Length: 412
Image 1: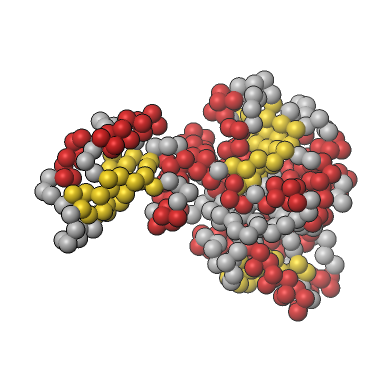
Image 2: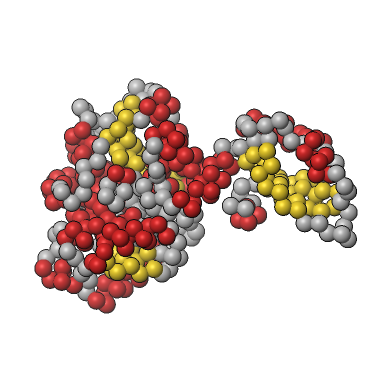
């Protein structure tokens, strides 16, 4: 089990190899919650996430024989960049295994950061498949495995964030919210605050589609989720670590599952209000504030970690956000195959602030009606009930497509 002393030593070991990131007050989130909300800007690390801390702490402790054999790791992207940065800084060769779902932007960043010190190997559909390939490599070659979260040195490195928070505030915060995938950052923060400020409330935010720590606490041990939503790729882990789970089991922090749509909304707000370009994992912790109850008068620290977003993902981000906010809805509409029916639909069904966002119509001459997939974007959430009333009153058969419907896979 890592200790606060391990974190203290890690801080000295990684000094100069990773950035000491600032705490910045968020006016928007402070006004929204009534708390004094501070953002721990781990997105300002050279690798745009906290992952470089644990990687640097572990690799810096290798002996000469281990350095000669090199290291291997598996990652969904951010840990890979941390390992690449540490290896390029320390002069250690690495092979880094990335799942095929890793965004192209992250793959390119790993190669750019690591330079000649790093070989990138892409394979497997999930992080866990990439991790299995990295483990097999280590066993075959004698290279040192650098876990993304499940190692005491990794946990101690991530825990240096909690140490910096304690030093930068005049007193202990009331609440710290951290993103949680495999649990390395969570375990590090619990370890530090557990010894130095046990009154601090620590909340772990998990993606709702990959709440593996929540599943582990229910089962009493780490368990593999059968399916995960990989959208929050920086925190979408099927099974948490043994070491991280033991720390969580000892300290029993609060765990919250954050819907992916709410994360997308927070990504947009971070960009529009704070000018922060966050990937889904980077917006995970601030998106969790909405469900934490009354925070008025509290000092709250939220870890923003993960600034490696691919611009090509923004259309999906906008789509998920609009659906979560209740501003975009999809329907299957059976149009009578008569001239002027589309104009009638527009005149009789759409409200003044409604907009057709999608219209796909398939005309079949041997039928009296033809199906159309219609996406409607509302001006306000409250406009949905009047829209449904007008649809019911129309002469067309209408079937709403719910977000949990299998049909949504063809839309989103």
